[in-house]
Amino acid sequence: MQIDRMEQALQAPVMEAVIALTERVETLQNNPEGRIYTAYRAIDQTLTIGYCDNLDAITQQLLDRDFVIQASRRGTRREQRLLLLTLKEIGLETRYSENCFSASADTLAHLNHLGWPLGSLRRSTSSANTRKRFNPGF
Image 1 (cartoon, rainbow, N blue to C red):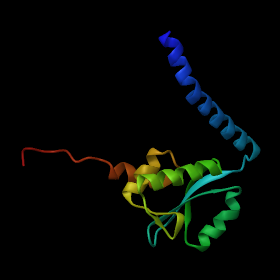
Image 2 (image 1 turned 90 degrees about the vertical axis):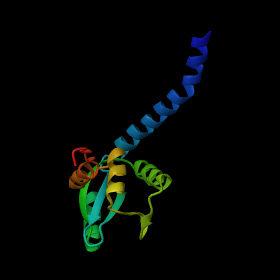
Image 3 (image 1 turned 60 degrees about the vertical axis):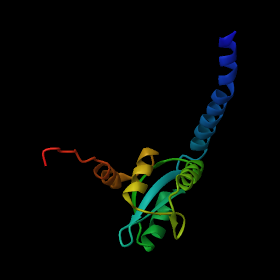
Image 4 (image 1 turned 45 degrees about the horizontal axis):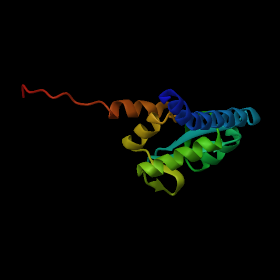
């Protein structure tokens, strides 16, 4: 009897996960060129996080604003929106627009944990998160 209640309680979350996965697969199939990306501007250490249907088309627009694409991968606009919502809930402040952030170690660590493409910026997160050992001999 208790197993029946557990099965019933798990049905809704499992169905939500199946629906979300199905939507993602369908979106990727319908738009195989869709990309999520991270671009970086060194002059003010700003990241821009985005989605585009054609990465080649947006690259020049980013370069005009001194941004260089660090990494990209196949993805959906929904992924980008969910990431931006998550970053807002975490408390990260935006710069200039809703998809621009400071390239601080904290921001990079969050993006890394959330699986966002970072490219060479990922190396910054591993060195920023190393802990110093306590040496009682000093």
